[in-house]
Image 1 (spheres, each protein chain N blue to C red):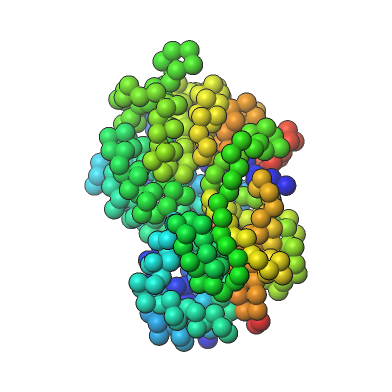
Image 2 (spheres, rainbow over the protein chains, first blue to last red; image 1 turned 90 degrees about the vertical axis):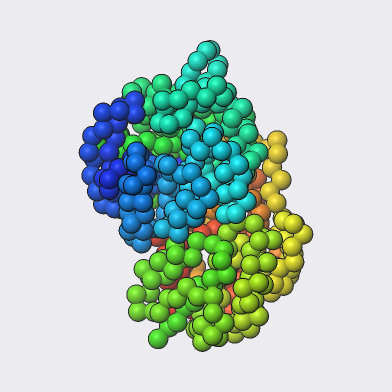
Length: 254
Length: 212
């Protein structure tokens, strides 16, 4: 008996639709969020993550009715991130039905937000999302604003800082790998997973089922996140779970 | 009509709990409420809880519903979830917080530093994700749920009941711990049925129809 590793399909949402980009650009439409979330739930997804990639604050609240609609039909954990700047933003998303809220850029510009949100709502619902780029052998730097701005922060140290401040989980995305379908940055994943005592979700670069398995077996991740291999019907979540279970990775099979 | 009140004292994911109850009991009147009158007139009570135990206990006290919840716990079916389960015990090590004292025992933190899981990876705290529940005792609420089924957990603390007869479910995370407890008209889980897909919905369905 052991805690199962998780598979988390990720839905990038803007203007009420799910989209998926390559290296944070070139967005393609991939469908209705509620319909997709239901499909993943039926396939055995362990959680679902929504990233609100809406650029304008006007469009930001458009995600709330989507989360409400999904949460009334899908009874697995939902994480929502993107544009979270204040404790009030965290509250709005939790009230809409999110179980966890991802904080990315604002964790860098205002680390106190992580501490305040964790204190108020509990660490279990605060996920700090880290976008990291390889800058030297064994070194990764944190980037913000969807990957545009360098911060000078070391990704491993940053993850440790966030855990200390009260983050309950780290969502770790390799910007070098995101959208390339060439696998996770396993060195990055392993370095962060070994450095913190909170769960780490590997993200960015999944092209096939072995990539998911490697994220856990080689990268040491507690969960793996992927978008395009599931959205475009290359694989179902169920197939991915069977594949990983066959490699002795503990999986919740349905 | 079956009136089920999800107790609103300012803590916890009430909507998820209420939506799951509505999904399995469309005929019931599922209400999120912090009103004493609603708790008094309810047929069933769900006590959720999320975050830190000291905050949950002080919110419950300050909201003015603690007495009503204690009264309801004497004879109405009551379901505690997560910190709502932990609050049923005498004491939590988290901030040395006294609980409601409905179940003898205390709540302690996972101490897994340096221990490795079967696959060689380290134990993370909080335990976050799906783990198996071993039905250590038969109970009406386990009906139609397979033994060793997966449920969703998010927690750093867990209850240690003094009375082994109160343990109806166990989970292995570094050690076996009580993840489901029951006594008379009370049932409570450390895991989140409202986030545990089919198995969780079945557990709530069983609760909605439970006549202890």
